[in-house]
Image (cartoon, rainbow, N blue to C red; front, side, top):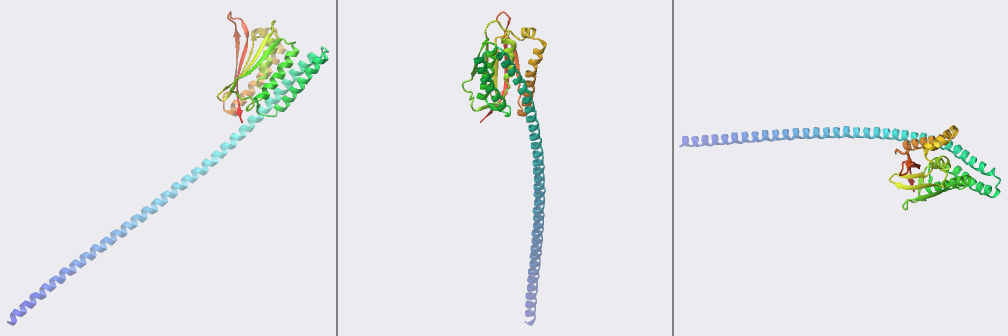
Length: 303
C-alpha cells in the first residue's frame, strides 16, 4: 500500500516538474520574443530617426541651394537692371545730342526762309512771317527738351514750318495733313522733329523745282507699336532734283537726313524696335518721275 502511494507521489511530482519545465521554457521563449520585438522596434525607430535626419539634411541643403540661387539671381538681375539703366541713360544722352544737332540745322533753314522774304520790304507779310517764325521757334525750343511730345504738337509745328515755306516760295505748293480717324492725336506721344527733315526735302528739292503748283501730303497712321508717317510730294523727283541742285545744297540736304537716321538708329536701340524710314521714287503711267514718298516708322507712347 505504501509502495503504491510512493509511486503515485513520484508520478505527480514528475508531472509537476514537467509542467514547470514547460511553463519555464514557454515564459523564456516569450521573453526572448518580446526582447527581439523590442530590439526590432528600437532598430526601426533608429532607422526612422536617421531617415528623418536625412530628410531634414536634404531639405536644408535644397533650401540653402534655393536661397543661394535666389540671392545670385537677384544679384544678376540687379546688375542687369543697372546695365540696362546705364545703357538707357547713355542712349538718352546720345538722343539729346542728336536733337541738339538737329535744332541749329532746323533754325538755320528757318532763318534763311525769313531773311529771303524780309528783303522784299513787304512789312505786312514780314510781320506775319515773323509771328509764325516766333511761334515755330518757341515750339522747337520747348519740344527739344522732351524725349517725346504729343502728336498734336508735332503736327502744329509741321504746319507752322510748311506755312512759312509756302510764304517764302510764294504759294508754289499746297499741303494737306491727314490723321487716321482712330488715332488719338492728344494722347499719343512721338519723338519731336523726326518728320521735318523729310518735309524740308520734299519742299526744297521736289516742289520748289516744279513748274506747276505742287502738292505736299502728310498722313499719320497707327500700326501696332509704331506710328507710320507718310510724306508724299508730286515734285520733280530725286534724280532731277539732284541734277538741278548744286553741291552745297546736296550736302545741306544730307545733313538733316543723316542726323535723323542717327536718331532713328538710337531709338531702335532704346526701344528695342526696328525704327526706320523708306524713300520711294514715284512714277506715272509712262514711267516718268512723279514725286517722292517717304514712310517713317516712329515709336510712340500712350498716356
